[in-house]
Length: 343
Image (tube, rainbow, N blue to C red):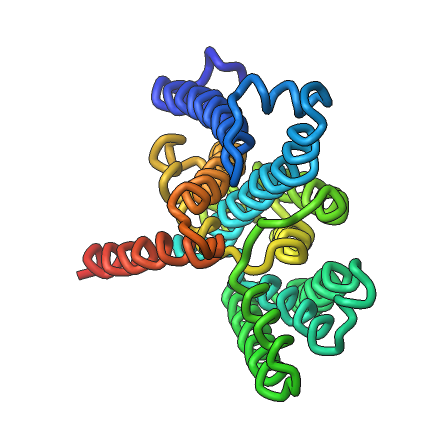
């Protein structure tokens, strides 16, 4: 179908979607430059741009390239993964409260990381923590993959994710409870709070391939999500394979979110908040929400990281704490809004 053949309302929402994408892209560029200027030593935009390309004072180049750029890139990458995953899962489950953590991948990755910390492997081998975190996400993925392949119900998938989530959180608590080393417990807690502080390009290199692959897989769900707005029977009548759609959503979310959690810890509510903020501007069309949600998630998480550095005095707040403080009231608002509509 050509653009000229589209109804006026759909053409209008498409134009808004394109405008939003450009607007969010511009914000990302602006916030990325601002992020590189903020730290214990403030630099001008000209200095950080030069340092990013290896020019300028060696100390400035080291600070920008080895400390600030990895932090900025990870914030953008993780935010995009969370925002896109949230948009896909909300479309798949037709539940406005669905988040990446609903299928248990986030908590499974967290459990894997805690196992690495509990046995001291993260101190001996620097790649142990992300490896165990992604292994935990992979195990949860295989379990959910097996369930999705055998069921025709999205409700069953949700309940399975809730069960995996509960088991992983219980095992996390058990590990902290049994740990004989209080320093290890502190490390577990601080890691679970979520942060992109003190990360390096090694962390970027570990997570980036999996995040990019996961996001690419999630984008394959666009057409099927549009058909699913007609209901499962309507989608099937249009030739949509719902089993394949569930598997795409599970595998894509597991790769993108699992890899993100493996290097940052838990960062909550981005996948919930961003799709809701952007959905009215794309005409409530699921396929048009995907790219804006990825860009919006990247923008929001990087903005939160910038705010943390601007307001912190002494001890720096953890990124996961800030996103939870912002997202939890929004989550409550959505629940109350939904309840009001049904009364």
